[in-house]
Length: 223
Ligand code: SAM
Image 1 (cartoon, protein in one colour):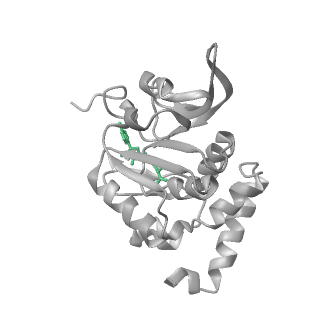
Image 2 (cartoon, rainbow, N blue to C red):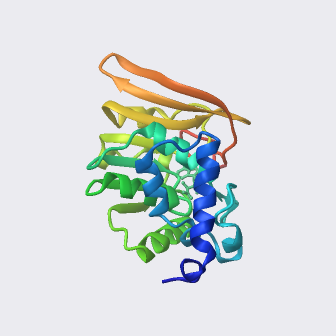
């Protein structure tokens, strides 16, 4: 058991964060609450930020990236409406925290998570291993291309801002599948899409989010 979990304040810290997310309307689903409680965020933040692991704010990671704000992670997870046994693609592994939450929700299902930075792939793998989470594959690569070898996916989550959703990701979504992404250049809208037999439709759209950008072939050029 690690330092914070043995800390008398641990329970009150997570309880306080859960309460804030509930009051602000970002956490409504008991299953998602359980998944967040089972994915201790302090296992996913760099050591120098342990003190603020349970603040409702993004936290810096290496390579100028961030672990997203808990309330935003909660909202994206709720909108994604994940079921036991599903296969999910995450673009942007970062710390692995979002993957851990999804991993809990899919149970015997599987998460594939891609990041473009090898340091973050290593960091996310280490964090997930510490918690003995074995149904997440963290992969180094350009997530804007998706992961055709494992497609189709029941759910796809993009955790970096894209000007438009990379077309390969819609192609790799199964029929009736859901995809969530922050879409926009400087400020993003969180958009939930569904793939129907007739095509892609927008289910939800909420403006006012700020994510780090999606790079790659179907994101911002890396040159
Ligand atoms: N979901 C992460 C977590 O739980 O910590 C936070 C993700 S962070 C907001 C966005 C991530 O997207 C960064 O780690 C960044 O390296 C990654 N990223 C940006 N463009 C990418 C691309 N084309 N392929 C894969 N990952 C990418």
